[in-house]
Image 1 (cartoon, rainbow, N blue to C red):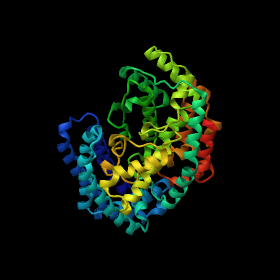
Image 2 (cartoon, rainbow, N blue to C red):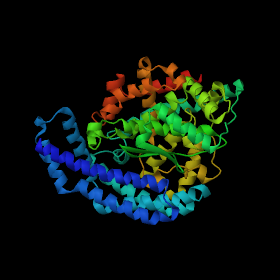
Image 3 (tube, helix red, strand yellow):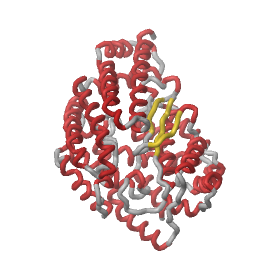
Image 4 (cartoon, helix red, strand yellow):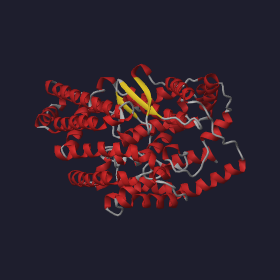
Amino acid sequence: MKEYKKLEEYNSRLSSISDALSILYWDSATMMPIKSGEFRNKQIEELSKFYHELTTCKQYEELIVNAENKLNELNDWQKANVRETRKLYDISTCIDNELAGKMVKAGCECDLVWREAKPKGDFKAVKPYLEEIVNLTKEIASIKAEKFKVTKYEALLISYDYGRKEEEINKLFSNLKQFLPSFTDEIIEKQKRENNNYSKIKLSKEHQKQINLEIMKDLGFNIENGRVDESIHPFCGGTYGDIRITTNYDENDCLKSIMATVHETGHAIYEQNRPYEYYNQPVGNSLGMSIHESQSLFYEMQIGTNKDFLSYLSKKIKSIANVDVSEKDLWNNSNKVEKSFIRIYADEVTYPLHVILRYELEQEILRGDVQVKDLPEAWNAKMKQYLNITPPSDDLGCLQDMHWYGGHFGYFPCYSLGAMIAAQWFDAAKPHIDTNQFRNGNFSSAKIWLNNNVHKYGSFYSASGLIEKVTGKNLDPEIYINYLKNKFK
C-alpha cells in the first residue's frame, strides 16, 4: 500500500494545481478586468506548463509503475485509480512541454481576441489567432494518433470522450441526419397550424437572477460550495468544493437565461456529487464530456421542458416577479421548434443539426479540406444545407461559440451524444422518478437516481460500460428519436 499511497499523494498535488487553473479560467471569463488579460494569460501559461511537467516527469512514471506492480494489494477502486492515472500519464506524455505551452498560450490569446471580435462579427480580427490554434491542433492530433493508433479525430476525442470511435459517431449522426430535417419541417408546420402563443416572456435581469438562484437550489445545487455569475457564454467551471456557474440575461426573453442556468446546474450537480473519497484522484473525475453533457441535458431537456417543471416555473415567476405566465405558454415557448442561428438557444429538434455542422467542419478542417480563411463561407453553406437559413453576420455564425477560439477541437460531438445518453438515462429512470413532485419544487427523486447510477461512479467505468450497466444496452439513437417523436408529435 505504501507505493499506492505515494501515487495518491502526487495525484492530490496535481489536482490542486488543476483546480487553481480552473478558478483562474473562470475569473478571466467573469470578474477579470478586460485589460488584465495579458497578465492573466501569462499566469495560466506558466501554471499550465508546470502542471504538464509534473504529469510527464520520470518521478510520476516511477510512482505509477510501482503501484502497478502492487495491484494485488489494492481494492477495485484503487486498481481503477491506477488505471486512470496511467491513462492521464500516457495522454500527457504524447506532447512535450514546449508544444503544450504553445497550445495554452495560443488558446489564451485567441480567446481574448474572440471576446472583442464576437460582438462585432469581426472574423478577420481573430483569423490569424485561430490559424495558429488549428496548426497546433493538427500537430497534436498527428502525434496522439500515432501513439494511440487511432484516427486524427479520435486523437482529439481522447481529451473529451476517451475511447469513442469516429466511425461510431458518424453512424449515430447519420441516423439523426436522415431523421431530423424532415421531422423539423413536419413539427414546424404542425405548430403553425396549432397557432399557439409563442410570445417571449419579458423579465428584469434582477428577477431572472432571483429565479435562477432558487431553481438551482431546488434542483439540488449546494450554493454553500458554489456561485453563479455572468459571462459572455454560459459555462460551468471551478472545482469539486467550489463550483462556478455562469449564465447571461436577455430581459426580452427570460427563458434563455433560465434554461441556460438549468443546463449548467446539471453540470454543477454532477461535479458536486462525484465520489468524495476520490475527488482529487483520476478515478474520481467526471467520466468525459459526453457523460457530462448528458447530465446538463438531463436537467435542461428531460426535466426543464417537462410539464410538471413548467408548472413549478410558472409559480416561481409569479411569486418573484409577480408576472402571470401559464404552464401552457411556458410549454409552447420552451418547446417551439424553429430554424435559428444560435446553438445554445436552439430547440431540441434542431439542436443536433447545429452540433453535426460543427463536427463535420472539425473533420474537414483537420483533413485540410477547409482552411480557416474559408470557415465563414463553409459554416454558412452547412447552415443552408441542414437548416435552410444563412447567418447575416459571423457573430450569428462561426464566431458564436467559444470552443475553437480557446483551442478545444473535438468537444462538439459530446453535446449530441450527451442528449442521446440523457434520453436513455431518463428512459431507464422513469420508474424511479416522481415527476408530479416537480410541481412542488421537489426534484430529489431525479437527483437521487443520478447520484446512485452516474455520479457516484466517477471514472470507475468507461462511458460505454456505464451506459450499458445502467440501461442494459449500448447507446441507442432510436431511444432518442422515439423520445423526440413522442414529445413533439
